[in-house]
Length: 485
Image 1 (cartoon, rainbow, N blue to C red):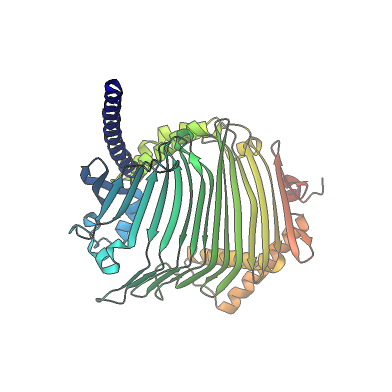
Image 2: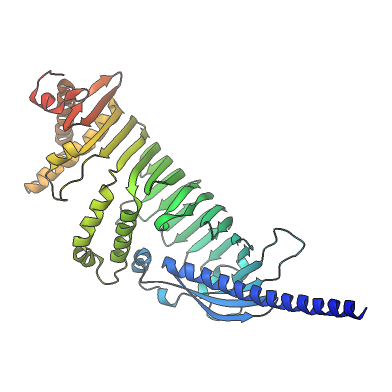
């Protein structure tokens, strides 16, 4: 009996000791996980995160982290320069995080750590405008970290309503919610985020963005390139500026924006594709019911591409003079570009569609590099033998006339300006433009460079073995007025 009691007591001590060791291990891992997340955000270069306090205990811990803007980052330079009077360097958000690191032993898939983050309501360092716009508990971020290295991040932002007392500026936002599953080991991320409408107004500027839906499903693999799928759909965008604005855009409306992208890795080569569709575009008095372009680039060698990417990031991060930095690195950039071209990249426009009140335009392109140039300063004739591809364009006659008229008018205006002469009266100018367009289209049709198909024109181009053909005939033959096939 005594031996049994001793065994029970020893087992109990061992269990208690093991439990204490596990709690210490769990608390330490929770802190390491939190600090790693902070470091990963800092590596992105947009924000600067500093953990000013971390109180570690056995069952739970608490952390205070201050977020500021990295104003030296090139991605933020445009924003900083647009409003130099705003104290960007003083901008701060203070985050409070509660880290729970006592797992539920009765739930098989229970998270090892649960990190709940929110804006700190008490900290005086908090940016003043946050207090004005919304309650500080409007932001909530929960991170559930599991034993196998996977994590689920849940983001919630409550609706925000703000009206300035000093001027007419205001913000109305319906909020945001998203869930992301992340695996550190597999470098995998899958997420879904939805946001409600945003309306912001300042002085005579107005920006309205409809509901949005963002999805991604992929991973960060070789050389830190993202491979997988992404999509973003925005239900309407509107921008209004003051009359006579330097940008010359007083009112712009897009009924719907849909963007999709995909990246694939195979045999150390990267292929990327994207598709952008804009529905019901209105700029000033012009309306375009639909514009769509789908593009793809194949055969990009990943290691040289990563080298070129790092060079460009280094150039853009120069806080003094990126252009001068680019010139200094030119001897390194050109060899890097040549290395990327060794993969014989292929560029495709899978679909180009423009639908207007005057008609439609459709186009396709498939172009591949077959031969690496001896240097980047080769004559244009080299590319006729180094490239192989084909293209097709079909455009309705009214739309072609409209596009040609716009180009002819711009060309004539430039000629008058170059000669220092005033533009002729509108009636005379219009007559000259109409005659120029009629003559050009008639000449192209007679030469065979445009084929009439009903109420449309078509042009098929092909480049192979150094010969460029238009509608099945050699371009040189067409330009010389011959009829050879």
